[in-house]
Structures are given as C-alpha cells and as structure tokens.
Image (tube, rainbow, N blue to C red; front, side, top):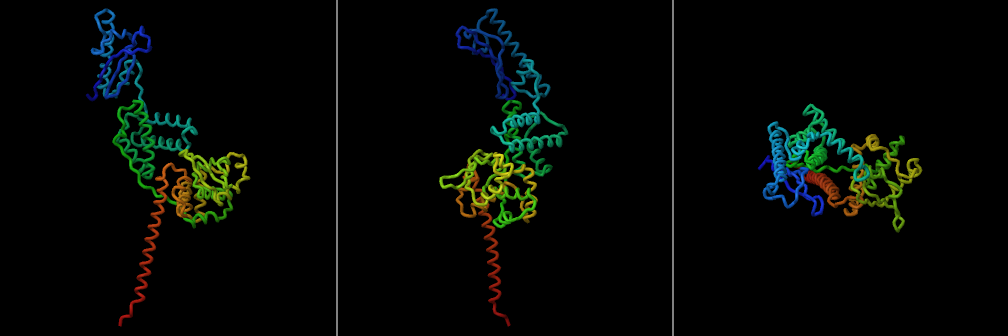
Length: 418
C-alpha cells in the first residue's frame, strides 16, 4: 500500500558464539524503502517467534520484552501519523531519526552542490580536472541565480526540486543566461549528478529526473581552411605575445592537441621511433586515452623556436603557454589581424587538424582517431561527416555554376530572329 509504514522486529547475532544472545533489530519500511536499527534489547534465538514477530512464552522477562517492543511500535506509528498530519516529509529514515532523538536535518540544494564541488576540488589530478571543476562551479552559480530569480531566496530544500524545477531551469539557462541548447543540456546533466547523490543518500524520496529526457542537437564543427591556416602561419606580428599565441594555436592545428594537453606537454611526451622520427605520445587530460601524433615540420619548427624560452628551459613544458583566459582573448586579436571571421579557439584548432590537415588530405579516419586520442571511431566520424557536408555544398555551387555557363552557351548559339 502506498504511503504505508510497516514495522517488523528480528533477532540478529553479532558473533558466531552460540552462547551469545541475539540483538533485536527494528526494521521500518516506507514506500519500499527501509532502514534498520537496534532496539538495544537481546534474546536467546530459541525464544523468538518469527511468525508473530515477538517473544515466545509467558515468563516475566518475555512479557516485559513484548511490552517494550509494542511500545516502540506504537511510538513509531505515532511519529508517522504526526508527520502526515503536519504535512511534513515522511520516510523510514526520518521516522527512525525522530524516534532516536535526532533532529531532522533539512538538506539544502546549494549546500549539497557546494559539498560535491569541494570534494571534487580535493581530487583534482586524481580523477578530475580543473576544467571539470570549473563546469560544476559554473552550474552551481546558475542554480543559485535561478533560485534567486524564481523563489527570491538563496537556497531551497533539495526535496523541493521536481520535474517543473528542471524544466524551468532549462528554460532559464536559454532565456536569461543566453546558453545554446547543447550548453544548457550539459548544465542539466551536471545538475542531474547532484540530484542523484541526494537520491542515493535518501535525502529525497523520488528522482525528479525520472520523467525528464534531454536532447542533443548536432553541433556544427567549424574549422579553418587551407588558405586561413596559411595566412596564420605567414602573418608577421610585431607584438611578442600575439606572435607566441599564434605559434601555439598553429601548433595545435598541426598536432590536434587541446589547450589542456598542450599546456602540460613536456619533453617526456616527445619520443623518437626506431627511424629517428619525433612523435608526441601523451595521455589526453580529458579522457586519459593515449594520443600518438608524428611531428610535422611546422610544429617541429615551433618547438625549436621556443627551446630557449625561460619557461621552457625550466624543463617542465616545451611551449610557453599563457592561461586559457588570456589565450582566448589574444586569439580574438590574432583573428582580427589575419582577417579571419571565425572565432578562434583551441577546439577550432583541433577541428582544423581533424579536417583540413588530415582527413581532407586522405589520411585514413582510423589514423586520425588514434592521433586525436578518441576512444571511439564514432567520435572521429563526426569530422568526416562535416567534410561530406562541405563537399556536398561545394558540388552544389559547382552545379549552379555549370548551369549558368550552359545557359550562356545556349544563348550565344541561338540564331538571330528576323
């Protein structure tokens, strides 16, 4: 029966000693969830009636124990009934805690989120990256802002999160925070982890995500063309910081490394094969999968260019990389100087390597997948699909051009009418 409380008692031995009495435990079951706790009473296993859930016999000791368990059962039902009358949240754990004199703790959403992020911060480099922590911190800030926007308070009990909260948060991210569809979905997925933690700890009775299903829109993989890459390579920069950032961006275009990967790239990650050719062999920061990339002449020349840089000579890295924030800001200046309208990012450089530098030049997709450090070939096939779409568009333009030329030819061949 829904919303019904079931109370049973059972003996449980804590040691294998046959002479030791069994401890009597109480088991509370509410909405298919249960919790057990000791009654602090003991009994000989042979004196317990499992059918009646009580003691055997009519001895003074048996009657006293029976009264004790009956009183406990009555008290537990009283707590259950009081919670229902007062319209408060009911669970087996809450009833047990109140009976044992523990004050019912109200678990707050933002507090749970902050505790999760604090624990994650302690595990940076031990299973989590700074980038992952930054995303969860950003998600927590969006949750805080949404709560203030909708409820006019700083925090709410996690039990107040329902399906409508999730739908509202999703709409808020798009309308008030101007998040793209897939970006909003990523924040929802991060938030879902926090709710699952609350559900696993029985701080909430139902999973509000049970009826929620996200959707992902195919994202457009932008990349630089051969001409744009060549312009970047040949562009002269008087400002040293822009020159350095251009070099690092070009290095990513010809190696496929992400910002976090090139930031930590060390001399130990550059190895020689049996033929004396240099390779980059490093574990990707994001997936921990191995990325193996043979060094082409252009990235090799960039490494040689900065071999004497003070930051490189310290021996920790092979390129003097700025912070990600400065890097992205400088890339905007570089794009402006080079006349590139696209938003230059390390992701764009990685996409350029996958498309313009490799796949479009006939490099097999299996080889590209290994160089990118993809775990699945399906991930790499996204770039092949991008190329197919570009080929299709280019052929459509060609078809239109051929039609126009055919029309012109027909018009020239028409004899003059008298």
